[in-house]
Amino acid sequence: MIPRLSLLKCSVPTLSRALSYPQVPLTSPLPDLKIPLRTDNASQSWNIEDSKFPPTTVTCLENGLRVASQEAFGQSGIVGVLVDAGSRYEVTYTSGLSHILQRMAFNGTAKYPTRDSVLATLDPIGGMPNCQRARDVLIYMVSSLSHGLPQAMDVLAEAVWRPALAQEQLDAEKTGVGFELDEIYNGPNSEALLEEMIHQASYPLNTLGLPNICPKENIDNINRGELLTYLSSHFDPSRMVLAGVNVDHGQFLELAKQYFVEADTSWKGVAKRQIDGSISQYSAADVKIKREGPPVVGPNPFPELIHVAIAMESCSYLDPDFFPYAVLNMYMGGGGSFSAGGPGKGMYTHLYQGVLTQHHWVYWAMAQNHAYKDSGIFCLLGSAHPSRARDLTQVLCQQFHHMTGVPNDVALSRAKEQLKSAMMMNLESKAVVFEDIGRQLLGQDFKMSPEELCEKIDTVTSSDVQRVGQRLMESSPAFAALGDLSEVPSRTDLETALFKNKGVLRSKKKLFTFGQS
Image (cartoon, rainbow, N blue to C red; front, top):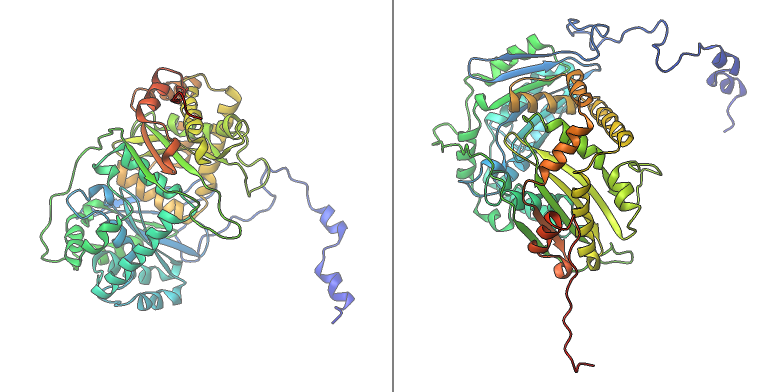
């Protein structure tokens, strides 16, 4: 069918009309632009002209629960609970409880016995439940249209306080964990496993080093009774933050009192255990897992790689040096030898210029800074062919030494701007804003605004970055390796390279026997 010419003319603006639009620089606001309203029923206490970001309102209830909300634009919102729990508190439990709890979240409650009933309740308000875990937090959240806040809060409270934990569901999730472990240990993406290994090497058998991924041998040992004991001990309002984004704080507070004060729980009458209040003990060790050959074999197999990670103790997110470490992390950067994002992606970071462009055999190199309430680690990770394991380890050691020197001023300025840009871009997501509010209140009991965070980043100097780089070298290295371990250097060689030879590994001695052909 050929479209009528008149319709085509109406659908495309004329060139003269496009040229008549005022030419406004990107640094100036558009003329006569109306300020968008968040929702029809939203309180208009915040004016976009007053501040770049809306304030976060926090109210502490009599049971210790902190209720926090922040306004935003759009017709949808997010509510959720962050719990001071996670794998770091599992020292007296079977490791892997948090992993199982995360998978069972929203799968059934006292009021909504199946996941289908949970989803059916949320469907009319466009709702979607989600649960995430980390070593130091469990996060339950529900996103929905703003007018569906009461229903979202009802489902959220059911998931937090009254999970069914039915044996049939538990057995199904145990099976699911088994499949998940097969993918983690045998799949082509090894970053999650390498991160798990370097934490276990940094904090062996304590707090942050306890398994965040359920060990395969523990799956059958986890039972409903232990799950309820864990919930009874850790799921207390004083260890929680209830956060909402794009919600009216007054309504949110009333619903919080209705659903989160004197609530009935699935663990009523279950005895509590003393919560592990241990401080993380950084104690560098080695964790190595032998895995030979490509994990997937086919017409286009993945390359055979050795994955290496070296970590040094950095600092907690409460330490003033947290911001210099964040800048240093962005300064080092990294990435893969091939970027699907196109040319120029990450090309100005030091690991890209100093490693990936200088050593063609390096498949991937990355810097990571993991910060927690009482400790932290700064890691350099890399991948290469197993025959290059020693070379890869040496390159990473040399990068630790590079961080003790004076950073390039242009690269440092770029890193600071990239860090602020990445933070601001992430904060455009309601889910990120929600987690940022909850984590800050849970960790430090107050909320820093994006403007304050940017100011902290701007105050970081070249000497600060050099100082924290030198501070890293005051600790022993934690070491993790995954793959064919035949060419992986020993701990003695690693420490000698880091502390005596400026990152250079001593030559591997080869013994020859006279008379051999």
